[in-house]
Amino acid sequence: MTVNAGRDPSDRQLTLLHELAHWIGPRPERRRRRTIHHDAAFYRIAFALYARHGIAPAVALAGEAARYPSCLGHARALGVPGAQAAWQARRVELRERARVRPAPRVLVAEHRVRLVRDGRWTRCRVCGVRVVGPVLRRLRRRGGSHILLAR
Ligand SMILES: [Zn+2]
Ligand SMILES: [Zn+2]
Image (cartoon, rainbow, N blue to C red; front, side, top):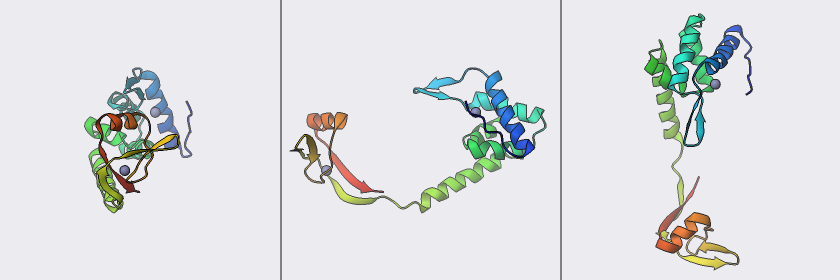
C-alpha cells in the first residue's frame, strides 16, 4: 500500500482518514476476481470519519473524487451535502466527453469471416485480420461475421 500524503493540511488529513477508514472497515469484498476497496460500505465509514473530524463536505468530496470519481455516487446515496450536485456535474462532464469523442471509423464493413491459412497463422481473407485463440475456435465451429474499426 502506498500513501501519498497531500501538501495542504486538509488534504493530508483526508488522506490519513481515508486510510483509517480502510483499517477500521470490513475486509474488502472480492467481486469478479477484483477486490473492491472503495465500495458503499467503505464510503459510509469514510464520509462519517471526515465529518467527525471537521472536514467540510465540499473539501472531502473534491479530494475524494479527484482520486476516486466513483465516490460521488456513494456520497450521493449517503446524503453527503453537495454530493448530488457534484455527481450531476460529473455525469454531464462524462456525457459531454462521450459526445465529442469521434465515432470509430469503419475500415472494412461487416462481412462474413472467411478463414485462410497464412503460414502458422489464420487470417480472415476479407479483411486480413489475424484470428487466434477462442475466437478462432468459435469461428471454425460456427462461423461468424465481423467488422473492422479504426479508433
Ligand atoms: Zn483507498
Ligand atoms: Zn474479416
